[in-house]
Length: 71
Image (cartoon, rainbow, N blue to C red; front, side, top):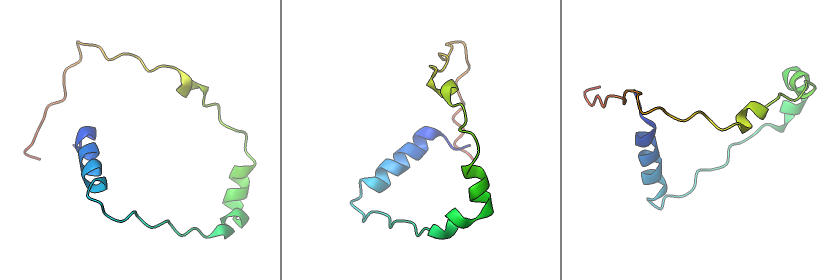
């Protein structure tokens, strides 16, 4: 299992090495003409207000994740 902290450290390391920035992705602008895009474009906006709420606090009684370094 990959832990978020590990990924954050890897990302920080990669970004701090002074490497050139990643190139921009090439986007085929004709995607606006695709039926799937046009169908999705005309749907109602989703209600994302549930994400405005504060997440529940972690409980101290939860067991910590084990740090299995053997894979």
